[in-house]
Length: 130
Image 1 (cartoon, rainbow, N blue to C red):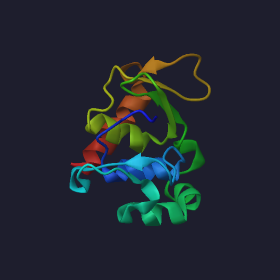
Image 2 (tube, rainbow, N blue to C red):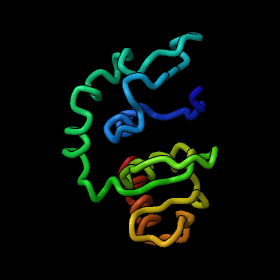
Image 3 (spheres, rainbow, N blue to C red):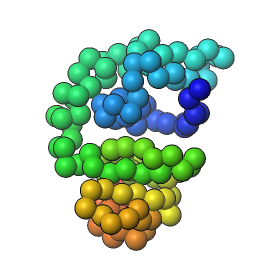
Image 4 (cartoon, rainbow, N blue to C red):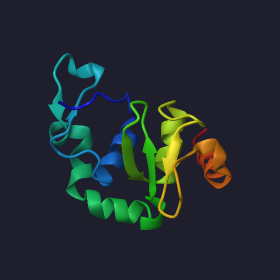
């Protein structure tokens, strides 16, 4: 069985598809679907995301940008994702300044608030969306 996570904005789902965290067979659900869950590949909104997911990820974000891992509210490791995904997850309250993140080169997992460069970048990204 898969753990239930979310809710997620469709842009976050598209990013997770691009990075391979969501596959074609991952079950997704939204209120408009009633009580039926569907495989991600069968949801019209995400068909294009699967057609060139690896290519889209490379074009949309540099490899260096997609280096962050985070622990979700179930303390399950997620990622790699770009800083923009971290920002969106913070905007939707899926992550907080106390959430643990890590990327290559760090000795240990740290809270977002203890990483001034990441915290600043997240604030900048969120300011652009307001």
